Image (cartoon, rainbow, N blue to C red; front, top):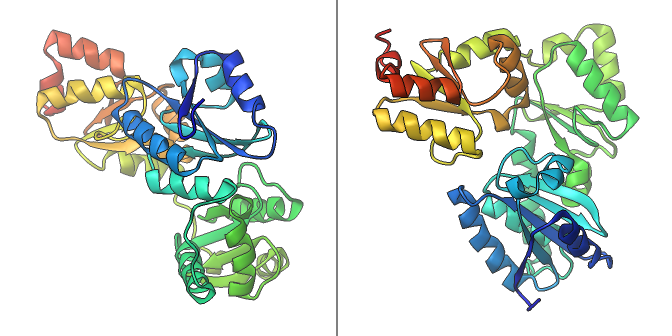
Length: 329
């Protein structure tokens, strides 16, 4: 393959072969894409440009729906999705058409990065700004090893269990995903270990401190409480007269079914809002139970479930869709 080119995997065997060709610790970036998604075409242009800039990195395109066994193995539920491999082992992933983030991850994981050198003082200042943004990204932020669903150390696991037990609403950051943050936050906060819990941008402490706060009863007064899921779902469903829960947005659908349903709704001229269930796993799973409807997309009018793509197609064909969207039925 020519330098700066992007390889394409047409079979599971070819995909595996492309991975195994790079067992020297160099980076392989795989773009799971679909021909029907315009955002994938845009990201194809991005990886073509990155391939020319990062000659030591191999870029591979793989049509997600054409190779379902590979997509299922790596839990590809939407396109575009990017997986990062070293020595045939997955080390990172990126869901969605986020060109700046893709570029950062390629630079971070790829050897011989072409990032221009920055004077040390400026680099430190930039890192502190970034750390401050991360700390204040949510009212309650937990910096941990792994994720709340998959903690990667016992202390992080205990911290998550305590916060969940007390109904605390928190966001998290996996310090394994970014070595710069992992090391920099120790200095920034003057706290040498993880996990670290922050509330309103201020450091609360690690596991021992949180255990003490729990024992004294102070934890419940310090940390923000999570809104009950049912109340949150009701609020989202009634956010607009016509609400569509889908993969992606009306501007950028991330699955074929979602793309079809927005085309149908757009043809009616009725205003509607969307919610991207790929951005919120709690809503994604909870709404299935709440509405007793197991798949997406889901369309609601005035807080009532209309149905999914098949129902909307039937209503369109019968002429009932427009009156329903206008709330006349």
